[in-house]
Amino acid sequence: SEGGSPTTMRMVSQLLASLDGLQKMEGVIVIGTTNRLDSVDPATRRPGRFDREIFFAPPDSAGRLEILRIHSRAMPLSEEAFAYLDELAQMLHGFVGADLMELCREAGLNALRRKFGSGAGYASFPQAALEELTVEKADLERAVAKVTPSAMREVLVTVPDVRWDDIGGLNEAKEELKELVGVSLRRAGTFAASKIKPSPGILLYGPPGSGKSLLAQAVAREFQANFILVKGPEIFSKWLGESEAELRYIFQLAHRVVPCIILFEQIDTIAPRRGRDIGVQASERVVSQLLAEMDSIQPMSGMAVLGTTNRFDLIDPALLQARRFGAHILVPLPDELQRRQILSVHLRDVFLEEKASLEELVQRLAADTEGFSGAELESICHRAKMQALRGDNLEKPVPLTLEHLSEALTRIKRSRIAP
Image (tube, rainbow, N blue to C red; front, side):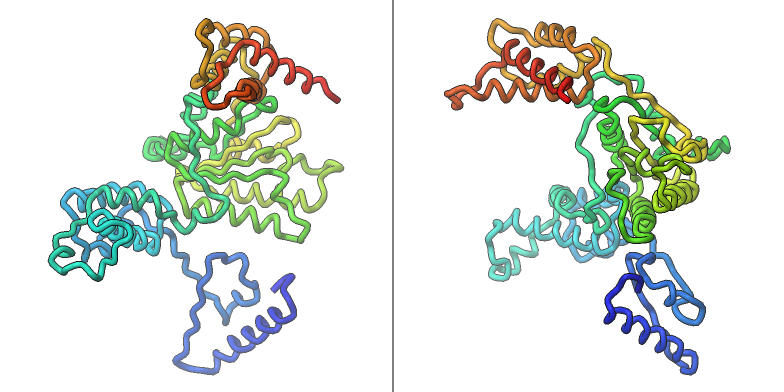
């Protein structure tokens, strides 16, 4: 009821009084449900009121398979579709019973659309035609593409579409990140047998624009993990306790949709060194809450936490301990070879004039961009493409030239030295 309206506070008071009165009654049980336990007034959770709490976790793969079979048992599944249920159960992380029921319903509708057309009135078709209908594997696949699990309808949760091929260079950082994330998401048995407890947190540090966030998104796609992006400055609230509650909710949500990767961008703004002048009490409470959440992560739980920073020195040392963010990966500015790789990625689909070769353009531009970040190289390529589109005839593609790239480079250089 904290911060609630007077009406809400009166309702809470009445509920508490009613719960207290139940102790004198027999044969009455009160059950409450919630998706956000932290939002419930603490007074209702005291002994004698709602003092028993049962957590309903999302089903595991075996549970998902059982639910899928329940909701599809009245459906005319083909043999291939029935066998596909096992594979679906393995891949539908974060789906709860209602989501799986909706998926089966959507698959049935897909089968009807396939046979009768999307605008057909199914009730008007003969029963014999409906009896010949079968739900195929393709109907289930289309349903999976359409149905979003309840937990992932949160704005926070996404499925990244960044591929390793979209990131030029950084080969050492890529391999190290894949190995470390694989420990948390895939290799549970190996480390449990050796009694080694890997660090749940991985810190990516380096200059701005070097590709830290892209690496995090690509590794999430590599392991088919759900992805929660938390931008540092946005976590803070002017209301007492809301920032800590938001952090708790983020970690609870991640546990519900494992395998999951949480990325804290600019983690130095969330967890700055305590005791500094910038460290207001609110900031110190958030640091303490983040430390507590990191300590609560069980090894190999299907969850990994990544952080990015341009200022390694500003992060609270307690967060950098081995049991929290114990793994640190440097993401440096690209050298000339890596700049070529990055430029090749961003220019691979462009239309070039006949006399120009992509390799030559990339080589010349890479030599002229020492000290540039990956983000700046991407910006150069984008500006050059936009410049090539400014011709009078937009009906046919305008070839990209070295002049377009040189002009874009000049503009970026000017912006680097601008006050």
